[in-house]
Structure formats: C-alpha cells, structure tokens
Image 1 (tube, rainbow, N blue to C red):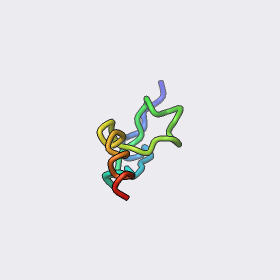
Image 2: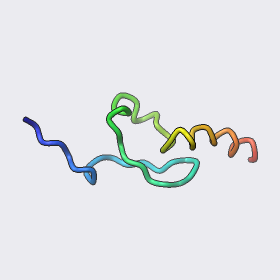
Image 3: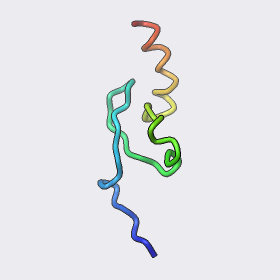
Amino acid sequence: MARQPSKSDLPTKICVVCGLSFTWRKKWAKCWDDVKYCSERCRKRRSQTQDKG
C-alpha cells in the first residue's frame, strides 16, 4: 500500500482575492491549474473586486 504524502509536501497557491495561501485538495486533482480561489466565498467576491477597479 502506497504511503500518502504529508500535507507539507502538497502544492500550494495564493488566492487572487484574499491573498492567503491554500493547499491542493483531492477534488482539484483534475483542474489544479485552473484553481484561482481558496474558497467559494472568494470565488463569489471576485466580481466585487473587479467592479471596483
């Protein structure tokens, strides 16, 4: 049985809305390159930050 990598070994990104670091999740395995937001809340707030600019 394969050993799972520790959380510190997983890739991370910076959220474009809030600027916080977030870690890879299994549900993002197929679309990790497209993930830009750390949460649903930040994804919904993206339009608010773009409208103000």
